[in-house]
Length: 153
Image (cartoon, rainbow, N blue to C red; front, side):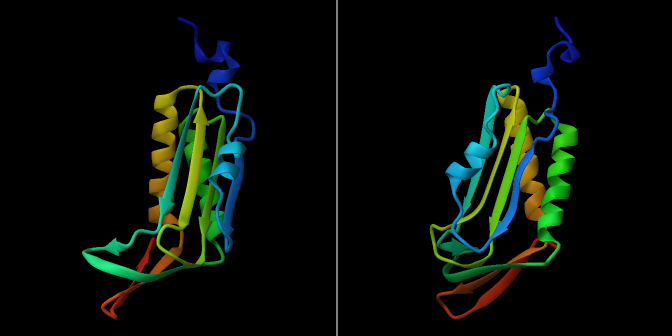
């Protein structure tokens, strides 16, 4: 069996972080998918988070995201951790801020790796860590008039 060092495609790319962003405009799955294209990648995993019509048993009427000025830098820090842990060929992550409607894209992340298992694991780590560590807050207003703030930090 060949070692990883004998196959450059099995290693992480030189600059695998291709796209990191906080946007106040509609997100594009196609843009993120294109950003992680890599001829040495055998697997690409993509996660799309959408605004759902309910949370905790309550009907969501409105939703807005806001973030701390450091949010994009924190996204990059997390991306760098994922790149250090997995043989990432390419990685992209964008998150929306502002007012969103049910069905709108809130976050899109993708990771390309030499193999599918690595791509799945790296993508899951990326979205889970973004959700838990990046200072982005969700303000939900429910149809019954109540509201709540939900945040990563």
